[in-house]
Every structure is written in structure tokens, then in C-alpha cells.
Length: 95
Image (cartoon, rainbow, N blue to C red):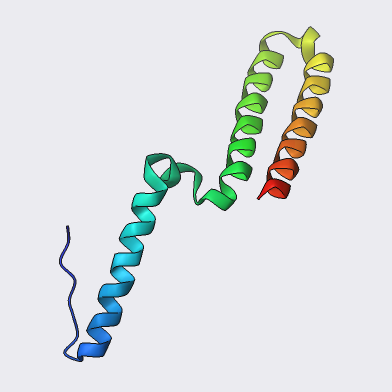
């Protein structure tokens, strides 16, 4: 744990320690995946965006190697985006 420099003023030092304690508690609450996906409020959006990006990259690679699948991949990607949007809006309404 790193040492923090405390000011001479006792009230200000108390405020610094309180803020540092809250920051450490928030970091512990977020955990390892929280570092990747952010806070609980935004994790749903980040997760859906990650799925769309990975599927888009995979579809692009597949379309390059197999050009006959491009039209089907386009329809599948649009369906995936619509499902991800429904997932995000449904998750936002639950919270």
C-alpha cells in the first residue's frame, strides 16, 4: 500500500484519509472485471459493445476469406446489434 502525504491541518488530513478509504473500497468493490468493464452502471453497455466489436471483427475476417457469405453476415450482424440494443435497454430498465 502506498503512503500518502498528509497535510499539517488535521481536518484536511482527515478528509484526505476519508477520500483515500472510499477510493480503496470502490476499487475493491469493482474487482478484476470492474477494471475492464467499469462500474456496475456501465458494465452492461461495455459488455454489449464488446460482443458487437468481437462479432464484427470475426465477421470481417470471415467475409474476407469467404466472399459468398457477405450478405448473410450483414444480416446476422444487424440482428446482433438489435439484440445487443434490446439487452442494454432491458438491463437499464431493471436498475
